[in-house]
Length: 381
Ligand SMILES: NC(=O)c1ccc[n+]([C@@H]2O[C@H](COP(=O)([O-])OP(=O)(O)OC[C@H]3O[C@@H](n4cnc5c(N)ncnc54)[C@H](OP(=O)(O)O)[C@@H]3O)[C@@H](O)[C@H]2O)c1
Image 1 (tube, helix red, strand yellow):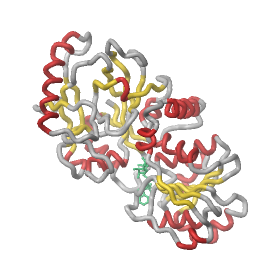
Image 2 (cartoon, rainbow, N blue to C red):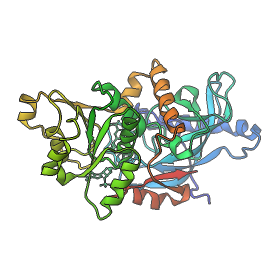
Image 3 (cartoon, rainbow, N blue to C red):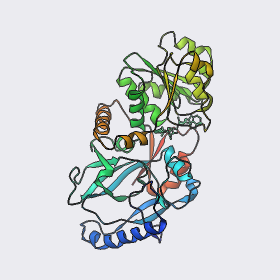
Image 4 (spheres, rainbow, N blue to C red):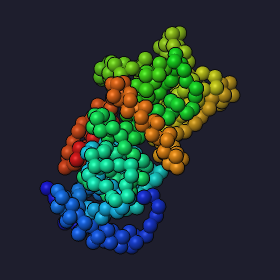
């Protein structure tokens, strides 16, 4: 059902701060221009699409609404895409709440990642053709929508014969896991990595990419009634060890290190005490890389870890990595090729997900914000 009487125009969202007046004026120029263009496109009778829009920051289930959004006309270097599926990630929630490091101008369409199919290409588009699957190159694209007109350079192709949910969730979490396992320590088969939030999307990608490289993973998760079930699930995708947060402070972990080398690398998506405990178990000279702060607690580094173990305390943000490497797409392409190859070999599967229609976005947003929400919510358009 068409929800809003009001059609807003949101082209690709940019982090730059344009004036609202300029944005609105541009919107209407695009909308006017699109009328005749889209009336000529076979099979596309409307120049609007549906999108999950927020006009103010706040609680996602309160501020996000399904609206009609005008599509701009297709420029020579643009592609018209049909979004197929887009996940709800913690960064999407934080962006809507207004607490993320980058915030698009408002009104904005939610969603930073997803997979779309190219429907139509502009006359000067070289790298893409109708039918190709693409994912965003950068954050803030606004993927929770049915269609979009985007510059060719804003997207990168992925194979269209991998599972839909794998493609929709490829650009953020597996890329983050890949980079953290590649760029901070020289890891060889037999080495170990320790991580918290091991059941998260990032954590599951870490487990699988590490397993494919012969690297042991020590996976820390929060206790829960179905701990054994979750532990078995993580072991089935390649986790070497799965332990509860509390075990990091107990004898159990000493036993574990009798058979498994101390980790060279710790991956922290939680912060607080959990991060401090990871640090305690690092090898001398090892690195802890913080990529998330799910507990909203700061990271405390014990003085002894710095003095006696000379640990390196680092951070990683995949958005920054993509921006630094945007001038030369080869590193991104090579990473996607390797990840897609693992997917095709069945060595990298997407986290368990609940696929929901765009209309069910309220329930999906609520579910994504629940504690112990071990399934990823994926909007299927
Ligand atoms: N820096 C980067 O480039 C980058 C890239 C991707 C993701 N991230 C960040 O990485 C984190 C995970 O993202 P995701 O998409 O993988 O998440 P996800 O699949 O939605 O999973 C969330 C994870 O956070 C854990 N968690 C939630 N609240 C917690 C708390 N209070 N204390 C401890 N653990 C808690 C959950 O554990 P339970 O099951 O026990 O609730 C679960 O393991 C987020 O902070 C996200 O923003 C960063």
